[in-house]
Image 1 (cartoon, helix red, strand yellow):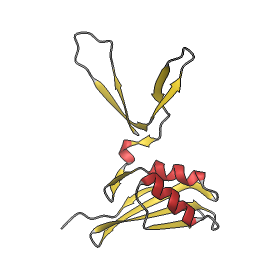
Image 2 (cartoon, helix red, strand yellow; image 1 turned 135 degrees about the vertical axis):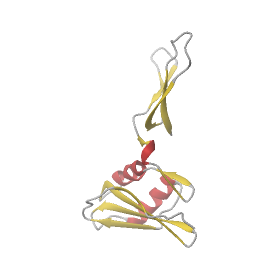
Image 3 (cartoon, one colour; image 1 turned 45 degrees about the horizontal axis):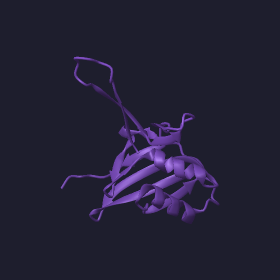
Image 4 (cartoon, helix red, strand yellow; image 1 turned 90 degrees about the vertical axis):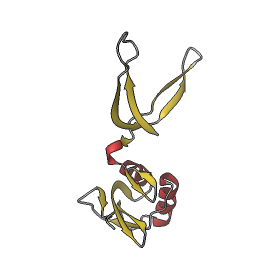
Length: 140
């Protein structure tokens, strides 16, 4: 996964200028009808400006939404709350869904997708706010 960067390759006698889109994507390699392969972006997965670093790992809210949408009983809407206590980050994820959603399965899938395990997962009927709430204080 990485940021899409656009570079103009046809300019002569001009400096190479790159435009950062801020969109996250992955490269998708597909076979072409001519027998070769083509590499294209695999859609937009999120934005770089939504990224937060938790426990030393980059975390995007779109990753949590993608996992939650795949699980039965969850809508994909989520709220991520980050606190700093006892010298470590505390990650809480609040998911919108039905009370019978399997939290153990959600924890396992989120740990695999995010590379870090959330400290707490909750499921609520309705979320009025989504996104990231970063309550960490880096003052000493």
